[in-house]
Image (cartoon, rainbow, N blue to C red; front, side):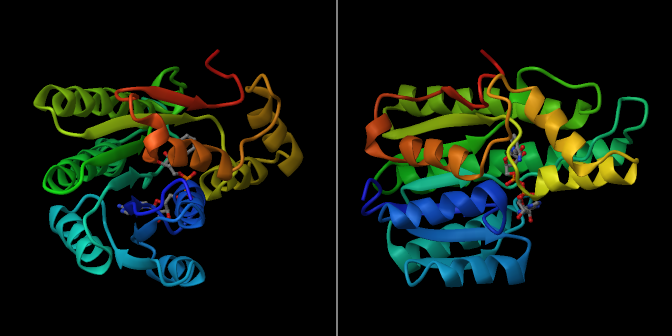
Amino acid sequence: MRLKGKVALISGAASGIGAACARRFIEEGASVVLGDIQIEKGDAAAGALGPNACFIRLDVTSDSDWADAVRLAQSRFGALTTVVNSAGVSIPATIEDETLEGFRRTIGINLDGTFLGCKHGVAALKGGRGGSIVNMASTLGVRAGAIFPAYAASKGGVRLLTRSVALHCAEQGYDIRCNAILPGAIHTEMVDGYIAAGEAAGATRESVIEGFASVHPMKRLGRPSEPAEAAVFLASDESSFTTGADLPVDGGYLA
Ligand SMILES: NC(=O)c1ccc[n+]([C@@H]2O[C@H](COP(=O)([O-])OP(=O)(O)OC[C@H]3O[C@@H](n4cnc5c(N)ncnc54)[C@H](O)[C@@H]3O)[C@@H](O)[C@H]2O)c1
């Protein structure tokens, strides 16, 4: 019950890391609003978590969707204490292949979406009981990859956005912390997309998985529960003096 009494809003909670965060937060005693653009999947995920969870359609690029989601959390469960920004997309394309439209789409969801989550989060937490904002950045926000100019730029942006939010809240004396988690390759639908693309290009499933695993000194893919455990820590009072931090969950990749 490390999150007993917390009220969390989690974006991208229909799938992968966001869904794992929702599950672990409920297990630790929090109430959770799951937000996502995948309505059926999000509804089912929330339904499986019981009465302390509910789903709302949340497009993270929409200011008014964020306002609605915060309002729902507060009317259903009381003052919001926690925002987890996990919604994201990763569409590989080199600088030669990426289009301006594609670049803007990735930045729009990953960076603008996290900006809006932080902005609405600070406003709600400041007016309530304080709390914690957790942003899913990426190891690719530290070490880029040739096929990830948009994704790496978005996640590098999320890391510095996180620090700016943390510094502002500390300077203002708000009881609001803001931290980033930097997952390595975690086996979710995002990575399944890469596995499928590798298979379509003629590689075997095993060889693509092995390729992802081999970049980590621990020589395996991460599980969605692993960044979710880091999110539980950052959302809990156990991390009360931690703000503006990057927390890698990457099998030693950035070491
Ligand atoms: N899986 C990895 O290897 C990995 C590594 C590093 C960072 N991350 C980051 O972790 C986060 C979660 O990724 P995941 O692996 O769970 O991916 P995922 O594809 O399983 O889940 C992402 C979720 O975001 C939702 N989403 C997409 N666009 C949205 C929008 N506009 N508004 C609301 N929701 C939207 C999707 O519907 C999906 O449910 C992402 O920010 C991702 O960049 C993932």
